[in-house]
Length: 168
Image (cartoon, rainbow, N blue to C red; front, side):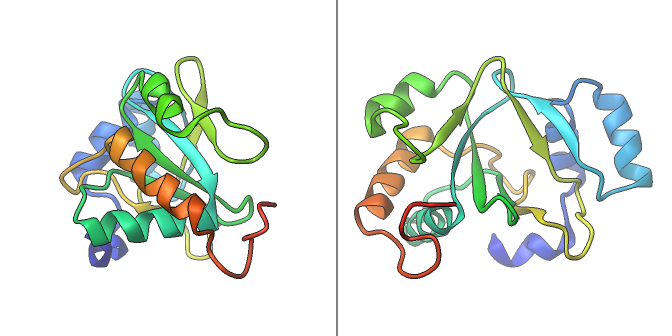
């Protein structure tokens, strides 16, 4: 799964992720001519997002991969130091029931009525926003309860080094 990332988002992934944008047809056209272009997507219809610090996101991904859990699309934003895991729409109650409230900078849940910036299917080299796990690789969404379990495990044993103090 991770070794396939260099190829960019495949056609199935482009079709799925563009459907979340306000004008899917225009998005697909834009991505044909400028595959690194970012687009805004409304959350709450095809997916919601759980946004976490990048260091915690890396630890969560390592736990999910080690457990053999299916991992959906994940977006990384280097400058902001954040990762966004795409989860099923309407999963806020299940997520918050499992991990508790979003106090301080623990996480940010983006659901119905929200908006998420998406990287293009082939982000420009050096772009701060990339697909950590691209859509169209078998599963597009991470199970919110599986993600919550990995998140709680990673949060209980914070990553060492950069960002471990909780700031971003």
